[in-house]
Length: 424
Image (cartoon, rainbow, N blue to C red; front, side, top):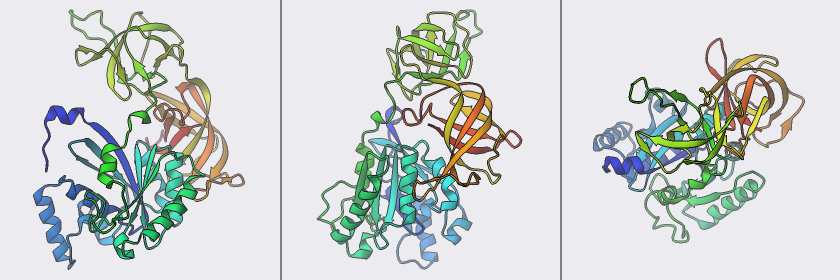
């Protein structure tokens, strides 16, 4: 495995991406190929899967075994949960969320994709665009994933023909045009043989684009975060007990949007008090500015009563403040959503309780059509609902800011997360 200096590794940009595809589209093989060809696995790991492949009577080293966590999953040939994989190259760090593709695991894909910068959707070149392909594109659109890469896999099984790739690309481009996806790219690959994954293919000279790894390393993601609206959910109030720092009062958290720097006029919500940033502190160092998604401590020029769950925003960049909120929710519990039911809500750093006031409609996950005559919301359903919360939430629409526009619903009896919501 390549080794990077600690300082350089910490400074590297992080790209989160999710993979989705139908059964046997080659997700595990693709991830294994990425890890192996980018030299992100140890020799003993490779030796182990080589021995396992030989034991199974396979003619090649089955790189898919790199991502199989449980023996039962290997034997069944399926993945039943979200598996996170980590690797790095000299240019970037990566977190992969490997999610199952079946419709009954919609909640798993939503979980894996909720923080992703990019989604890789695999298509079997032999089968072309199928229902699950469209569903994965729809979920990527609903979750506002900024970048989508369609990998047309198993090109080796269609003799690397350009017309097969072109047909699939044009069909999916036409479908994606009806969705809210702004950046879609297409790559012809063979994960099994490594064509266009890390190394350029010698068998598809008609394709003049880069490899998948090159795309992952170079796709710009700095604009994926809202750098316009300054948002700072307060996670912790810092009050050192030492005599030397007895008058220090700072507010720690992760910046959810915009930029903060000394002198910036800010407003504290929901109280509405105004002040200015005195300093932006980071491990004893005062920064000239900080931006999303950095974790810092802010101090203010005025002594204002601020606690966990409050949000510091730019004075002229006021978000929404309300106790009634419309959300698109992906239901994750085996127990159906209950109209007028009470749930706990976690939004940024704020914890409140809510009641479900209305179930407006459900979404047909295969077509994006609204279903108005069926108000039952069961596991893996996506529905538009109205919440009434006990205390005001400070939020943006999910479209404007994924960090301040998302929340989760929690069953107070079991403390289980039962719903993931995107604020409309």
